[in-house]
Length: 99
Image (cartoon, rainbow, N blue to C red):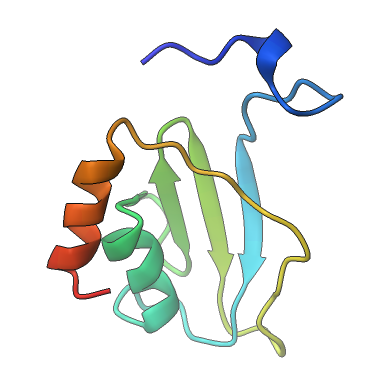
């Protein structure tokens, strides 16, 4: 899938890729906890196997770095947009996960 035309993006910065974003959670680094299951099972990210003590969740060319055992779970005051080739397929995926 080609990258969007930069001139049509709804931002003054014209950012089309965010390499990674760091997120904090109070949960441990186990891939089976609810935070990590959301990124891996629900969003469909793939776990980077090179990092064992925390989850690096790959999605397209980007990653979510999910830092475990933090005193407070992070809440973003903003939005992160994810683009999927087919919303119908993604909806079916969500239904199959009972989410």
